[in-house]
Amino acid sequence: MAACMAVAALCWAGCAALNDTLSKQLLDYATLDAGATVKSAGSSGSRSADSLINGVKDSSKWSDGEGWEYTWERGENERRGRNRNQGGAVQTAIDRGSPWIHIRLKEPQRINRIVIHETDAPDAPAVGIENAFLQVRDMNDELRPWKTVGMVKSGWGYVPGRKAFQMKPVSKFLFNTVKTDQVRIVINTMMDKKRGESAQTLDRRVRLSVVMTVRLMEIEVTGSEADISDSAASIEASSDSKTKSAMKEPI
Image 1 (spheres, rainbow, N blue to C red):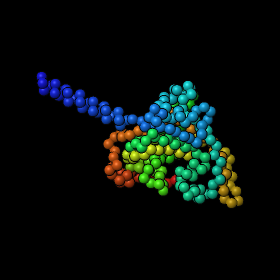
Image 2: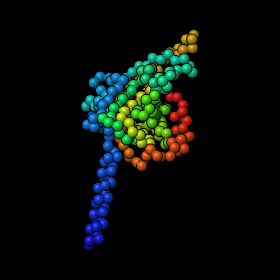
Image 3: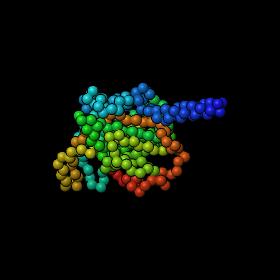
């Protein structure tokens, strides 16, 4: 009898410890309640970026005014083969007018997961992100602080060291644990982009007009969900060929 009670006590203690660990692992640091703040390139109507960190993920709440929406028209003058500035692909996308979301955590945290919740409701059907960058700020690198931990290319999600996955209304990017206080997402294009007429001028410039709308419900930034540590194997060693190729090529 005593032995059974001892075993039961051990099981209870083990379950309690496991539940405590899981609650800590799944804590979302990117919420208003957690002290996070958010800024964005803009918003359409009253759907501000604050909705992205208020904890409401249910797309059915879109009709109640929840969620963030931003419509933008991007006019481009691209010289073929020479369309990037010195800031790299992400800064080039921002300079062209691509929408961005910048989340600042209350304090530095160890994170390894970013989840993007798109709308998926009758009055706001899922459109799909076509191309995007997910970045975290490296507090130890003043020269180039923004590090890409994931990207979307042609509707597929890529994370160094992991297999590519097709984007869904809820897409999870799981990466090696990093300590950061800021996260940003830059959306280059959506799947329903509408292009205007294009024309090539005498100086080989191509004029394009692109109109797109992004609608998101929530952005999660959480700590460890799995045993992925800073001492994990080299990301290049474990990457599949498709991910390696996508992470090197421009979008």
